[in-house]
Image (tube, rainbow, N blue to C red; front, side):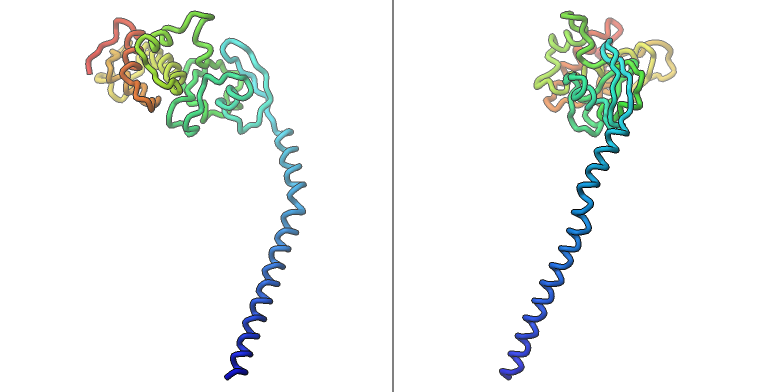
Length: 227
């Protein structure tokens, strides 16, 4: 019995020893296969990034810019990091909150989802470009009067979105809640219409009553308060 137990003990030790040796060999081999290529791979990536930059021309808030950017750069990152325009906010970065809304050729878009290279030659307006010197845009003033914000993080996107939305209304663009989609001319801008048309802009503070009131005021006498 003692001889059998001793033999089994030796067999276990041999198994563990060979397992450790084999594992060390696999680890060493994997390091040799990867580490030798790591430096050259990083250098190649850096060279590719530098050589693959794309020239982009943009007119932002009335100023012309000529830039070279990585083709993967979003308009949001370009505005904030390259043009020093931090008014446009990065919220969800997935096109779901609306904090990054800007105007491109007069239309509102989520800049976090927009590649800068696609908008070469476009006219871009951010919240910084809405005011005329010290004179605020009417919607900016209305947001202040009606307290259409609390923390203010979503406010630039809310205001830019509202500017484009009022233009859409003037053009007769209908929404999902428009009662008569066949009517010609300006849509009656009820509170329900405002909420529907601004639903892509989320305010986590819940300042929606003030936002609706500000937009209704600026929209003019054609606006209605009916639900």
